[in-house]
Image 1 (cartoon, rainbow, N blue to C red):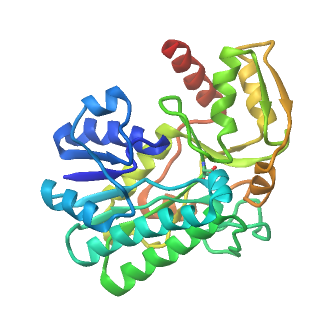
Image 2: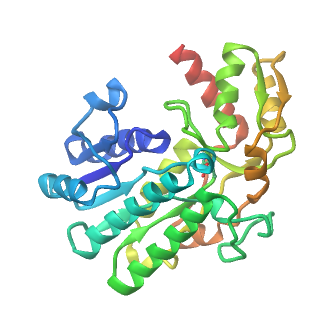
Length: 312
Ligand code: VAH
């Protein structure tokens, strides 16, 4: 069976649904620090769980005979700047808990998300390489870079089968993101439908690597199902699909809502975004486990507006 820690978050929610569809609801235990949507709670086993509490995670693992853990709980970039020590505690101790459970052979496989936030202001910004200068300037990025180092260490030293991808900004309609710098790319669709206008907290030409959630979920499961011997990266794989600016999103929305208006009022998150790459080289993910994105910006816009309209 599979345990998802942080199952009520932006990625966790969709990962839970997809894994339950794939492996059967009873085989996928969802957990989070608080209860999730009615749909999520009704669709299979759920446990309230603090990701920083080793004994609590161990209890759930033993009770359900868990063999794989997806650790999706974390404090994201914008919020982490407001609460650095709480972010470090959650992001690192949750990872140590899961890595140590695997080291003790209580679980056999781990997925842990990293992020393009591991790159910093002096990283080459276009087609950023798998291995390059990494001097992250955000609390969140520092925690993800450290986490990658620990994942690789536990793999090499203890044979822990931990797998990871550096997610770009993710766009989904089923759940709102929580405290990220790329959240503008979700908010804009909601407000385009509700108000016909959006004030972006990132400037118009802020180009960032982004991905539609369906691609991100498919990549995650594809990596977890790949033969271990095919994997040459045990820190975290670069993962790319598209790159765009807030202005690009506005143009894409205008194809559906012609009089949509965007304005720009950069806030503290501009500095975070400016420290990140503009595009990612994910050659290794393509070569090692056949990664191939499917959604471009216009397809993402179509999915977002269509589904948000239905949701009403
Ligand atoms: C954030 N959505 O904005 C996350 C992600 C690359 C961005 O890590 O913090």
